[in-house]
Length: 477
Image: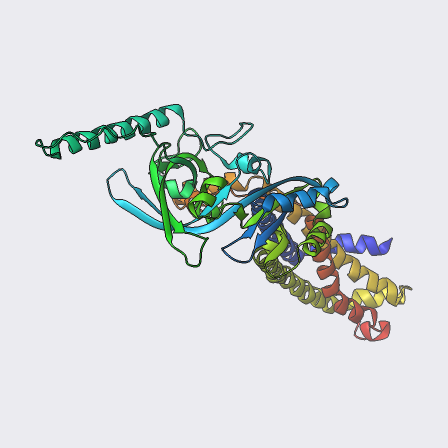
């Protein structure tokens, strides 16, 4: 009983103990906030990557792709092990291309992109692709068909061009010769539709003030629905590669909030791209959606045995994005080690304060031992004191850290309003808010680590006090 009483008295009367408590509190709060933000970014990134990619990807190692994708998908469906685990499949073709379009000012823009041919009948149900389309979001199916008013505009434009060519031919014809025969009726060609990455078609411009939607920026589109674009790629058939190009119409915008995809990808119909590249019945990848992602590793291993060889590679979406996910994991681990040094500083403070207390309380320790207190009792007093400091600091730090995490965006906005400097700029990160993910296991681990550090740094002074001889402690009394 006397051990707990002395710990409580030391905790209340030693003002230096407040410095240790505050150090532990700030360290715990910092770790909780930083880990929550890091987990938030990591979780949001994983969600975005998973929705853009499918659970498993079978892809070609070269640009020429592989033949008979329908036959390969039938083999997967007919397999007694794989068939029940597969929820859906789709084939696609991915190639490099050059995109050209004209700004409203009349200036021409040219940039490299990745041109993706997809099957609109099956791609929408794989990986949540439909969720990232702005104009067709919420629809049951996706379509590259231009809207009626866009189709009518291009049809009128084509007819006017045909009529102009006919008039020019009549005006330049020799009047002494019989008139040329009327050209055969030509079918009006409307360009094929395309989905353009949102960061290709737009950019963000800051507002002078925050609007009613809580945003301080506007998205300015340089490409609108119905605008023509020009794509140039290379043919895949034959002995050599020849340039192939065609005109397309913007029918929708792809917005995954990941700049790597939104600023580089243009989607077109798979059949159209196959014809353009002279690669009928060839694709570069098959994307597979599973009923349960827990089966991904065994399914990928089975698929690799089904399609062996260096031309095809089977991987889960995590394996495909492995370097990026591993880099985030390593960065978070290193950051945690560095932030734990903050709590270690508090531990050194506990060590210094306890050493001073042992020196100051030598007489009290001698009296306690003379009255019958054993070495273990004195040891428990100081270890209990260190445990109390750690627990109190961890509790207050947890409360502070959780509060900051929950109201992090409000705190960020308040600081931006007071300082005039935006801490989290959505123009840079392309997130509207700071993502956070407060995990109970992480909070518990941080608290346990903080308390253990506090106890560890109190061991040495506690051992010194426990070994103190009562006669030597009371020699000068």
